[in-house]
Length: 116
Image (cartoon, rainbow, N blue to C red; front, side):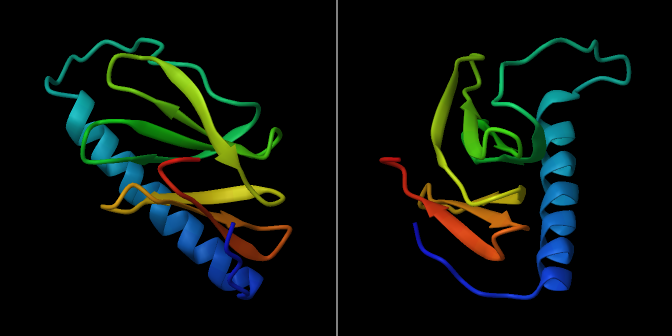
């Protein structure tokens, strides 16, 4: 896990922007009609607080209470991808499959590789 030091205000801003982008992408991928029904897509770890979607349609959640990242495949299969720092509040997935998580209380960024 790589750590990058930054201040709390920047972490909160990055986390908010990542969440807004991820939700926008999620809506674009899964809501194809004006009357789309709501269903349970998959399970997460405890206390999910952030979300990201990769180009393959996999959904990732940063789980605050369990301090880890979950991946839910397009088929609805859930797995834990790796652990994070304290209080993960923002998540992004790079084109190479790396997962980046902003950890508010440990003041760093975690990197989880595709191998976990």
